Image (cartoon, rainbow, N blue to C red; front, side, top):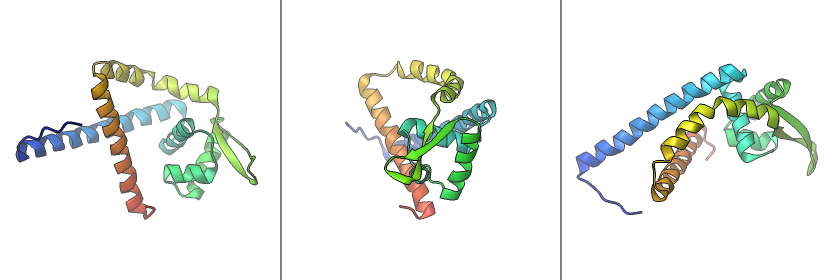
Length: 160
């Protein structure tokens, strides 16, 4: 990717502007998630775990806990709530008869997707204004920012 550097003070302001925008985005997405959670009856952590199951597919509770950065006992409570409310199903693990696999319940997940429809439409419109090259750069930045966030979280918990 081509890099055109400006003078140091301008560069610092630009970098800070991106960081500020990321903080704003984080706040707005947290507010959206709280509202989706309130409408769907899901706690923030329940919504996050459900999203992981949708994105990553069925997995064991321990693998899910690792992906979510949650203690296994906390994950048990989350999964119990999600199962009681019909959001997930637990099934025997075919590879380990002592274990289980957790999967999302497709029909229920559709309820949550509908609550995010406004945001998804807004993003489609927003991203439609960028070139393929710009979209590649944006996707790369967001993925790397997510990796940096995961690494920072792991550093705080000593799991890196």
